Amino acid sequence: MVDRWVQDHQRDSWRKQAKASGYRARSAFKLKQIQDRHKLIEAEDSVLDVGCHPGGWAQVAVELVGEKGKVVGVDLKSCVPVEGANLIIGDITDPFAQQTVLDAIDTEVIDVIISDISPNITGKWDIDQAVSLMLVADVFDFALPILKYGGHFVTKLFQGVGVEEMIELVRPHFQTVKRFSPMASRNSSSEVYLVCKFHTPKRGPDWHIRPAFEYALENRKGGPEPLDEVEPAKSTFSVRKKSSLNE
Ligand SMILES: C[S@@+](CC[C@H](N)C(=O)[O-])C[C@H]1O[C@@H](n2cnc3c(N)ncnc32)[C@H](O)[C@@H]1O
Image (cartoon, rainbow, N blue to C red; front, side):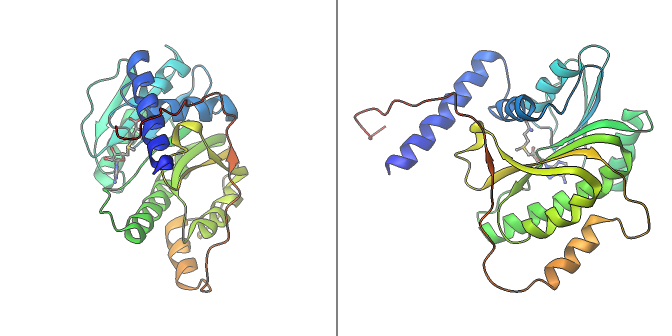
């Protein structure tokens, strides 16, 4: 109960900080903390923001790339415009929406892909977690061919069955693949970010992640998932507990 109170309090605190800083969502701080630690986005970069609603990450990305950079976002839901970003309504798994995104990017390759994509939560954890991983696989398949050599990719994952398989499949496409848990998402159940740096494009017909991921899942041995080693973010945030818990 105390843990729950602390979690709610922390979430509220990030929300308040987001509002005070002019960000639309506390998720903006997640990207800021990922950026502080991993330095993914540089001035003048082109960035694709997958699952961009309501636009918190897009706001941060626009600040980072500056006036000479480019930010294109895509989401099933429409966003209030973010100055300096082109936010498209569409399903990233739909070829029509994919073409619209490619047209908006309008360059051959993109520097950084940031994906905070998360499916509609049904409340059935196993299903939500599995659907989320399939979506992540689809995002990789769409985005890897347009990510530049040496480019970076960050995506949200929900820990659970299949995460190890996903990481093994993605690893050959990058020099480094690490899990990172920003302070701003510490209290969000099993959410973690996979930070993939320095794209090393894989050639050949079998590079697609989704079919290989489905195959790996079908052929995985039973048993519990190993505990994940998540790199923690440094804490600069403290919470003073109130004496009353009835709030
Ligand atoms: C956690 S929210 C993203 C928050 C965002 N990063 C921000 O800072 O404002 C996840 C988003 O993924 C979107 N999403 C889920 N499935 C999608 C799909 N197939 N194509 C595009 N967006 C999708 C949802 O609509 C939702 O808005």
